[in-house]
Image 1 (cartoon, rainbow, N blue to C red):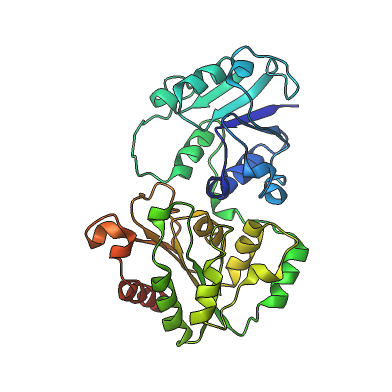
Image 2 (tube, rainbow, N blue to C red):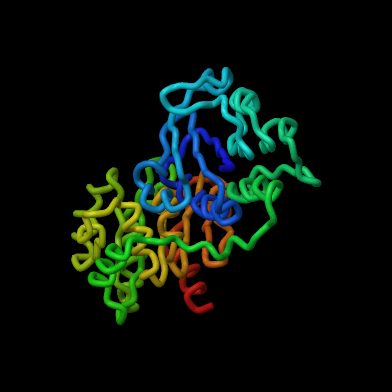
Length: 324
């Protein structure tokens, strides 16, 4: 059987969600290949939080594989790196890792590391844009070894039982407005008071304020309920599935969502009709270019502090998008 190996440092939840269309496209273009995913620096959510989705595409996962094992082509408890692969795709750009990976036997080694110097096949036009959406480079590598397809066909396949539970807690006659007020990175967090002000405004317009809180933000629940007692927290009703799976599947029920630059914003991008992301010190590299995905950037308000953006700015922006 032919084999394709994809190498990465690791995937946290945001990275993993961004890469799901890439997984889908690999399996679509190479349906008869054995698809192997290898990480070096850490674990991948493809083997934990997103396993139910990623396992639809990836056949085998090996985590925290040492560079020495790869460089020496060792056969160890995890994998026989002395085997030959038909295709290897190196998704990271650290030269030492790429050099180790280049030692493996393959018909086609694809890597943008060292400005594509190590790659067996190179794009005709090599360009560098530090703000380019991360996923674009992954597809560029894939296009070098297979016929380009339209990746807009990608749709996440959820458990039918999960979708049934979501249908039970959402009423299709209602309008739901999603809010994700947290982030693991403090400087990315827009004030909770600002989120609440926006939520109250759209509640008065008939939307149900629907909040998604990560494990680091559970303390916000009481603050939210004090100000908006009838706020809706869907994750409280579905405990059999991972939080990210629930958020992603719930997102298709949302008319609009507002989020900080966080893993949850990537989850909401899976299905929200309109997603607004508040960005400050981080750029747009990990922000999708989908037509329903917008950013409000603190740079447009005089700096990098997200709280330079005021609720009235966000409300005005959202109203325009809802009307368009």
